Length: 101
Image 1: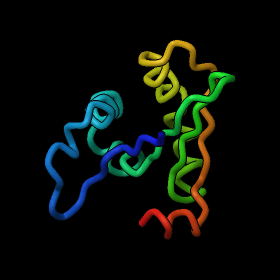
Image 2: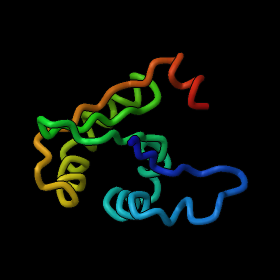
Image 3: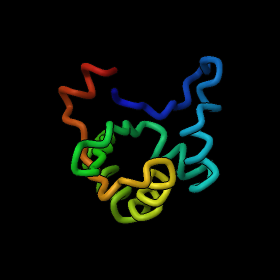
Image 4: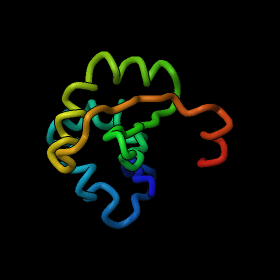
């Protein structure tokens, strides 16, 4: 199962900004960074090796998140999943973004 962090839309769906994952990210990173960098992130399931893949739209966003948020993101994910060993942050391909959009 893939877990998508809810984002902002013109007409928000009920509870989209109150999902536990979104609330946790907003508290940890602040509303501005959450909206600018993290709200469109998709967090995958942990594999047998303790690795979670996080997918974000675009290479620029991927690189920025790796540089500025990866360590704290790892800590947050590990709070809920202590067996986590590593996160991998990937850029979604344009084809994947079109299919999901």
